[in-house]
Image (cartoon, rainbow, N blue to C red; front, side):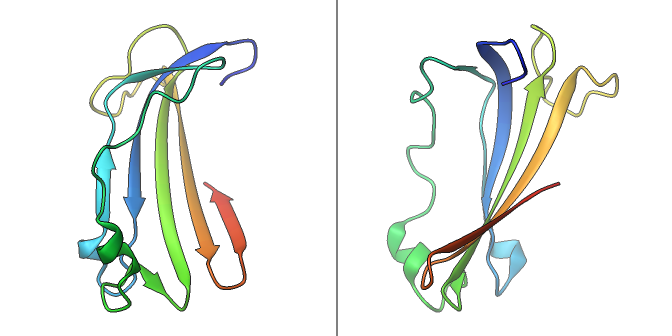
Length: 113
């Protein structure tokens, strides 16, 4: 949330990177959603990637005990909606997060771009 706000309109893209073949990465786009500081548990994906595919060693999502997740967030600066395409007048902030999680040593690195 931006400073002083209790809610924000945003849409986001969530990607689990396939480390063997990037074109096989699993990506989902979320529709516009109002996130509220007091109630933020009413969002997500019902069906993203089967657990057996995510954890299978030959599928490429977990390599050397490491999974990579990318999240792009498009948050409105004002009360207007986020358009379906990138808005050139900078009415919103764009955030990109890349999370690298090593499952074996339980280490997480997060990059904000």
